[in-house]
Structure formats: C-alpha cells, structure tokens
Image 1: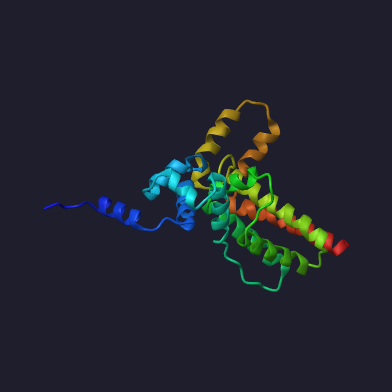
Image 2: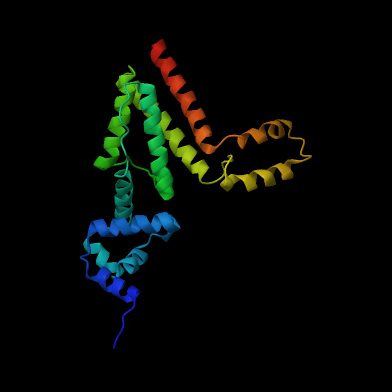
Length: 227
C-alpha cells in the first residue's frame, strides 16, 4: 500500500491549483515577509508554487511587475479608522494604521524608499485620499495638505525603517543593544550623548512614535491657525 505523506499531498494540491497573477503575488509577499526582499526571485516563487519559473511570465511581466503587485496587495490591508470628527485625532489614527501596516510587511518600506516613480494602484490612492481628506478638514488648502501629507508620510516611513533597525526603545528587542552601547560609551567624553542616551530607551517605541507624531500635528495646527 502506497502511503503518501502530507507534504506530497500538499504539493500535488498546490500544483493542481490554477496559476494566477493573484497567487504569484500572494506567494511573493509571503516569501518577502518571511525572508526579505532579496529572497523574492522568479525561480523561488516558481518553486513555492510548484511550477517552472518561466510559467510565471504567462501572468506577470517580470519581477518588477510582481513587486508592484506586492505593494498593492499590502496596501489592500489598510484598515480605515472611523472618523471621530476631530481632524487631529483622525490624523493620529491614520498615521498609526500606516505604521501598523508597514510593520506587518517590513520589506514594503524598502520598496517604497527605493522607488523612483509615483505609486499606482487604487488601494494606495484610497488610503492617500482618506489621509488628504483628514488634512483638508483641518482647513488646509490643497497645496498645504499635499505638503503636510509628505511630511507625515516621510516621518512614518522613516520611523518604521529605524524601528526595524537602529532605533533604541524600552522593549525586549532593544534592551541588550542599549546596555552594550552604554558600556561602550563609558569614558568617551561625549557628555551630551551620555546624558541623553538613557532616555532613548526610557520610552517604548510606541511612545516615541506618538511623541514625534504629536510634534508634527502641532506644527500643522499652528500653520492652519496662523494662515
């Protein structure tokens, strides 16, 4: 009696499923989330789907086309916060949701940072439209809303990228690095760094994000009130 393993059954089922653009993009996003952007290759995606890499070209143009789809797929996960009627609270909620989403898909930050052309896709523009609407409700002109959107977007993207790498914070991921840095700085003569350094790890990364976000929102409010 030929007893087939679960892996063999799973592979057969996977191969019988029709190959589609959606399956390719979903697989690419899964690989990217697990192993990073460099792991996303045509050969790797084909292997995950149980097909030859050349078969993918019947559904996508190339790797860049896949990465465009991956970005759009990730943006589809944006959960629009309910409006509170207060633009500042709504702006905070939108910013936190952007941070949550980018935190779920860290390599999407790299994709966004390395882009040399505007984003496309309705999912991205829906989120953008909602954010711009919040800023317009604050009383901003279309020009000022666009600039405020860029300022907030740059802050969020930069914060998430730092959070994934060099940022210090009061959490398990950063505690060891903080202690090692303090030890290394002893006797360095860097007075300002030594005095301020403990406070980098005094707050959680959530608190640090909200601090910077509040600074930006106060600046936007001041600009609106002073116009």
